[in-house]
Image (tube, rainbow, N blue to C red; front, side, top):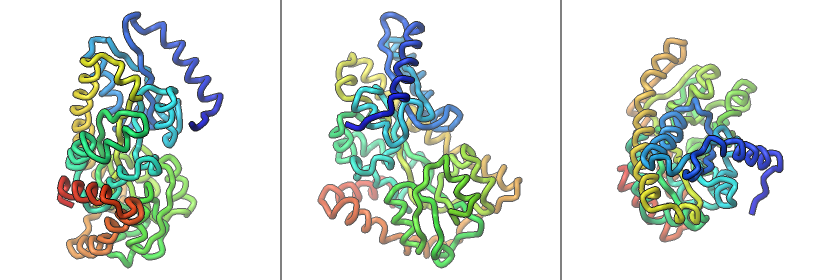
Length: 338
């Protein structure tokens, strides 16, 4: 069991007590945490939309007290917060839990899905049954729904096209799988949380950033780079809404069903919202003088050839060459056409 700071726990308990006065007497209030701000598209079109949908579908039988922006626990500790009863539900980034959810890191592989909707359909199918679902259940939580961010692009101070352009650069990556992607292109993967990337680029610690375009504006990264690709596929990132298993199983069946059904709808909604937001962002950044470029067919082919080894690297390093890892890789490939 991991310990949480006394200050953070006391703040959560105090907020919980204060909120009880506004909750109907017959309602069951659940504490939900995540690490995105309420202005981020993942929160606006995902988390908060799901909260409202579940409360409406259950006619107030279940309500939520929402703790965004790491108010209840840091991104890497959200899973533990649910397991230990600090939270009832949390939206977790699976890459932050690589040690306990190694198979779920499959989403970080490059060249598999081409849009958030495509990737979300694949992840939803794999969370419904199979190894991805099983390893989440083994931690003591239940996956309710999941979705992905759009394919990661590269943001840098110069145009990064052919693999030779990437040699010896420090590239921000998310998780160990994306670090393999950077290494396949001759770069060094540097793991830095999203909120710290802006400063790292300003100070010259990073030469480039792998990031999903729908999330760039939330961190104003377009202000510190001059070139942004728009048609690459340098890996992905998945979110999963999880609930404490014992708590979830004690809820009425109709409430459980509402949480899952509304999650299925919201998963595709937030995926589509992210995909749809990208064109507007690109137009705005281009107007600000950022070079928004498309990788040529030759560049895409060369990058794909260089990154081919990443899937096998994942299978051997993360999956330890197991039959389970092979099953996960083959199913993910079938679902995405990667």
